Image (cartoon, rainbow, N blue to C red; front, side):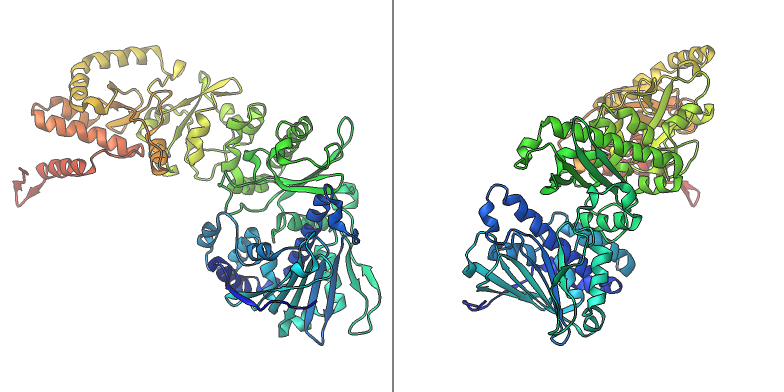
Length: 638
């Protein structure tokens, strides 16, 4: 091959330069992963060509046997990885090797801590791929020719990983990509040995379905090319023939993760439909897990032929953390994403896959409590999307959810709905909950007064997804859900007949106070009521059954949504000293100030925002000053 055009110099995208620096330092103790990553990329290139050749077999030309080759020369300090896959043209090589075209890149860099051990795992989740070459190489040379392109349309990419790279057109006889690593001093000693390379391939890439070939011997006295991996699709084997280590290494290939998976499930299905599924649960959440719009999913194969990455129709959004693959014998090889939607075969596989994953989680929750607690810490907030989006499996998903509660008083959610129901009081027929912006805000809500007094357990919901989920879930196991801050709170038989009659009497006795406060607050509220839920606090804000809480309104406003100005209800505790004093207050101005303060503090306690914070502070300062004595004199602000 001959270079035909002068070299062009380009700068790396800023994120690439930063990633290279991080990687060299953070992955220093795990250097051998570079070979796994490069082999994995070569395998992907062969997969893509095999798929494209289904509709255009001319792309294979006179070289139909897809393979990966590894060669090395210790004297010249070179390691060469070659594939005859899809290859790249100049534009593609810049896109793949000069930039990080990945959503969430900025979030990834913000998530790094400076701790090498932790950051190495984050980098593994992000996927370093080709850039791992610079862990062991002082310079990397890539020569690639895209399938279907003429020999003189090949391109040379070269870099020392120090901020830039060069591009140059060249000729290349065969399609595919050749990567030459000019190894650094330490890597020459460690990796340019036949046994060492074969051992790394056996450890990390034995499952690659394309043959990985090497020559035996060293220097100029090497023998013929021979296959050094099993070269069979691991998922096609029976479970009894696959070791735990092989499952783990295959996960690292399919998920591009450095860590072992937490768990996996492997099934061969035969009958009306024939397919294989292999699904993994990662050990930790990826940094971009909450990007619902990001393309997610699993790999789809048809008759062992790779079809596409991220086949989102095979896995629902609320299981987007699952990694793995499905290999179907019944789908056509020319299937597209558009055809996947609404396809009966896909729907059947999807439904069965969901059921199997739920079974795996149910087993983990029942028999491996510590493992499930770890799973919940990583993915529980995503699983909570399930009851909203999957009505068919709603009850199974609800059984898997974990909550904090007033019974446990623990920020770590451990309470199941079954456990809650098992502890319900004899006459209790509802599952009570409260949603707030934090655990402390939920457990300290003044609205919980009557529940604590009567010993009624309340679920404490403090994640952003919680209120959205509860707005779509009405009951579980025949018990309806009820918000502790709902205007139509009903304790049913838990409140005795005498208690109800006493409350009616109190409401009548305080009717004038309620009307007076309502007149002061005007359009700020829907109504003022004597509370049956407050015990220690003077006031609280409650919402209608179908109204959005102030906490949720604030979240949506922060996200840029225009929110209708719903009016809350103010409840007052007529047994509280402040409310009794307010009832006796004859000065109209002071009555108005106290009324506004009781309303505004209730709004703040529920995570809401004040329409006029300055007026609140001014009122508060005024009232404090009136009750302060400095040198024996009361200070009264004009």
